[in-house]
Length: 199
Image 1: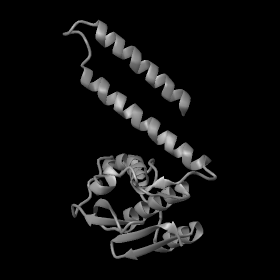
Image 2: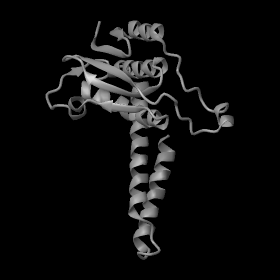
Image 3: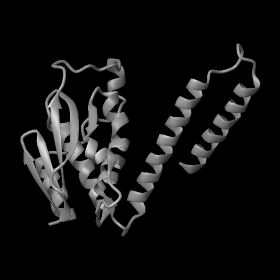
Image 4: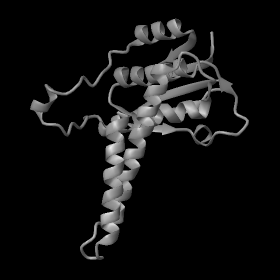
């Protein structure tokens, strides 16, 4: 993935130079270029995060706010594509300089993604998922309902060709993941509590 991203970045740089050299009425607007640049940066961050998760046998841990931000940034586009909001509590979005680190950051990222997948797969008419702090060492993820009729912008024929919309993560699968990684989860209706300390 690094090579295609480098080519995209070089092409974007060339496009910027051409836009700057063109006259005002002929030139490209700077706004679309900024949008493309932000999307490329987000893609690069996503690739970097995935590489870190796959290669990290051990790590220095991760803060709660950084954990939430990484997982939210990875899943937000996919959720919003299907009309599902992903909201992060203000306290978690900001973080603090003296925030404690939790060991096994890679395992925690898998747990948060597992909980997001569980809420996505089990909540009827899912409209949004909110991620909030649960005490000093936990997270609470809460699903809320959206429209009664889900919108699907894709034509029927495309449905046969696309990847499945559900990951088949039910309560049993989520508990098996938590047991395997050594974390405590508690399913409470349409919310899940996750402890960030090993059980």
